Picture 1 (tube, one colour):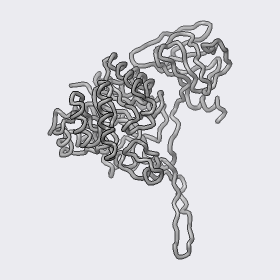
Picture 2 (cartoon, rainbow, N blue to C red; picture 1 turned 180 degrees about the vertical axis):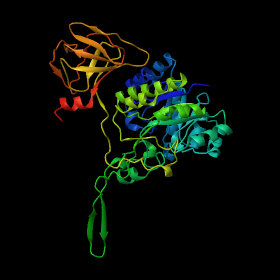
Picture 3 (cartoon, helix red, strand yellow; picture 1 turned 120 degrees about the vertical axis):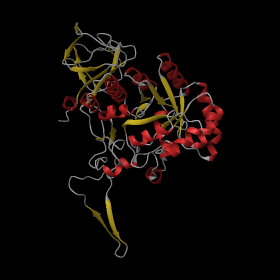
Length: 430
């Protein structure tokens, strides 16, 4: 059985490197030009994106370039120029959304594989066949598709690769096909600037034109007013079922605009889930424990296994976001010699060490720190906190951008974290 690919988001060069360090086989991203994540794309310019592709290729990993917004007529020439520039960087595929752009990309860069974006909303064999006949090598199917429908597509077109989303934000509408943001703020979802209006709380009013009277309708106690807010997708518990089907070529994590912590921890959880499945040792509680450390809108296993009309738990009516079980305390630099504070940390604090995939550390102690193992995790206890400029701190806060010397070298992009209750207590929030 061919091993499925794990595909992670790369919102900038640092997150690209973190995703690869934490187990991704491939990453996806791009500059802001014609990408569906304009905010993320601004963190990549052409030079840093080229560096990211080179970095990934040196590791034997892949990079898929997002050019997946929908063009206006006035932008067609700009699209052509952008595709040509991206092709020069030699990414491993171009992710596009529309039939016209598929044709354009095939003309301009015939040597680069085309992946069809989930924005095209492919859910059946007929549409899949049309795009396959146009030269598309992989389809990122609609988030709303079922696994049975994926199997049906693969039976008819066995050489077509199928990619599915397994984790991240869900759209209130069919992926990206929503006008709320465009109507309220002029920010168009299918052109990369969705304002996420569905995440806002709303109040409902009744108005009588005869009396010109307006009444506010009270919400039901405990229901809330986040009436369009979809929970986040979390398919980790179904990775075994997905891979057992044998029809899915790539498992994709959403989240180019999310934090480096998210990029690392979520990628690592799915890396372990995939590897454990092939090793015959799949245990969903392992992966869910890690995924619940991240901020989320509540989790749902979405529609791959159960159809939308069979579900009543995909909406989060009470909140737009909630804390995970842990808070990031610090992120280790690429060279492993320093770290930057992300949450107030003091001398004597003990913080958990989250390691990238495939690296280990040992217990140790010196005048500046102690590293000890508790159950399956390592912790570092700081005895000194000193910046690279020699300044000593009793406590360092998240707003401080000083690089702090590590008492012992750690693997690149190691994450330091603590439980959320302890983090809130340090901030005086409890």
